[in-house]
Amino acid sequence: MAHVITTACIDCKDGACIPVCPMDCIYEGARTLYIQPDECIDCGICVSACPTQAIYEEYRLPPELKHYIAINREFFGPEVSGLGSPGGADGKRVACDHPRIALETPIAQPLG
Image (cartoon, rainbow, N blue to C red):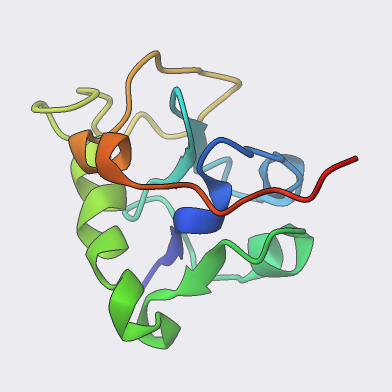
C-alpha cells in the first residue's frame, strides 16, 4: 500500500513533503507532485507534512479521488514520464504531468 497525492497539490506543489520522505519517493511533475508507489514504504510522514492535505493512504482515499491511484502509478510508466522506479527522486523534476492532470481543476489557493 502506498500514499497518493491528489487534487490539492495541483498548481501548489508546496513541497513540504519532499524533505521529510525517508525513501525520497516524491517526484515533481510540471503541475503536481507524485509518489512512486513501488518506492513508498507507507510511513505516512508526508501526510503530516502536507499543508494542503493532498496526501492520503490509498485505502483512505475518498471515492471521488480514487482515480489518483492510477494517476500516481501511471506517471512513472513509459507512456508518461518513463521514470520507472529510479530509487530516489534526488531533486529530479519532470517537465510533464499525467494527461488527466491537464483535465483537473485545481482547488483555489487562499490569497496572500
